[in-house]
Length: 265
Image 1 (tube, helix red, strand yellow):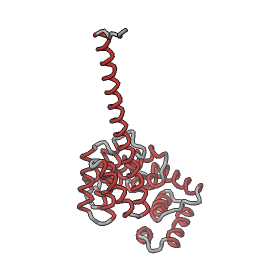
Image 2: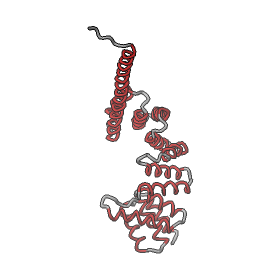
Image 3: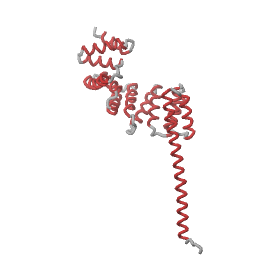
Image 4: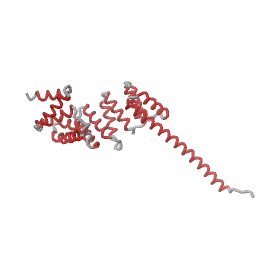
């Protein structure tokens, strides 16, 4: 007895087979794309680690593989720019940074790298723009550092008010990063806002007292001296001055201190 497949049933079976084939093909395509993205990510992570170690040759090898898979990988292009930068090829570095941002304007780490590069090139307005845009990404995991860099850039642009605001955001986001506390304290002393400067500086000295790995820098000692002088804390001033003279006698800050006390004579 022959089995007869009704036209309607045959059409349904054919549709099911075609649909299954499409799903299989689609899944395979997505799987391959995911594998490519993972490979690129892994190559870039390895390259970045090698760059940090100073092994530029191995880093370049991994990045070349990443860019062979995806020539427009923003992370790959930005990392390659770091290699060019380390090698002193500023023009190639800037070209690669620009390509990375053009490829993915939302790649915040690339903007941070580019901003740091521009800062090093003394292109402070361009650096400010990159840091400002990077800082606007509320999901970026190291946003406090971006605000710190933005503050440094505003200082170079002779905009202490904007720098102070940026450092305050850095302190808030990092819950009291030492470098941000010092930068903010110093700017507030410069502005004559000693009471607020003292509040932030006290947080810094508290961190130094609790950590055996942290030590005063010439800048932190000079800022402490200036605060102590304002509040007439002679013993504190003498203690900081002794540290500055004994540990950093050739620093610019020690020369500034000597100029400061010479005005009293």
